[in-house]
Length: 129
Figure 1 (cartoon, one colour):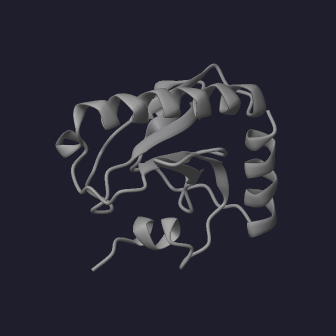
Figure 2 (cartoon, rainbow, N blue to C red):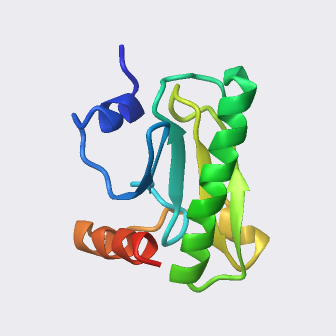
């Protein structure tokens, strides 16, 4: 059965897209820990990030770097934090999160809540940065 991320890639589920190429998709997390929390995924469904072919994994990090630069320009923050947890969805993904302190990447804290309009505005800010 296709993962929720594969359904997003296939256009079966909506997302707030911030970047895309032939191999990867970056979109806003629907349960963000902070404004501008982005997920970067390979379009090919691979469950575990370390099962990804070396070249594809390298390309994924370069793609994520480009997204992070746009995020940094669009969202006020000190840095873009990077984490891979890999338990939430059986589809490899990288979390990119605008941060000012270590506490901004606390996945156990209450999630931020944004309307669909606010998410759309954030995605546009990142895409156009």
